[in-house]
Amino acid sequence: MEDGSFLLRRSGLPDVRFAGHVVAAVSSKADPPQKRWRNYAIYRTKSGKLVLEKEGITTMPGEEDRHKVLILDDLEAPSKEIIKFFGRDSLAKDLYADAEISDVEVIE
Image 1 (spheres, rainbow, N blue to C red):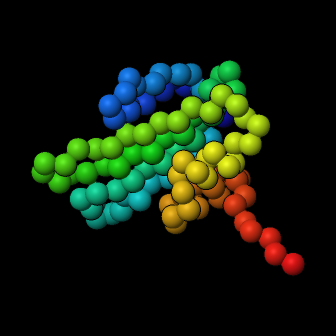
Image 2 (cartoon, rainbow, N blue to C red):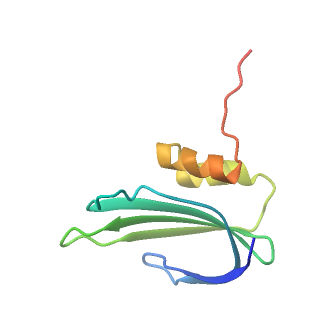
Image 3 (cartoon, one colour):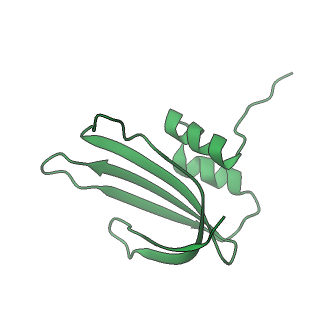
């Protein structure tokens, strides 16, 4: 994967800039366009940190886009933190499949 430079917006906090690459990214934006959609992405920085991005985008008058970013410095159990951040909706499950993250309950 080719490294690039990224600038991620954060609502109510300073934006985040880093060099790295996209691990996985998904969007609920459909064609034809809708008034609201979500974008989820996982990045890996050049130093090995994971950066998680969750956006809620709107074209509705009076509404603002929502931007959340989580930086994972401790990669001891990243899957748990990733799932906690994105949740388990269908878009998140598509992201996990692209990133090869397993979120399966095994029973016997």
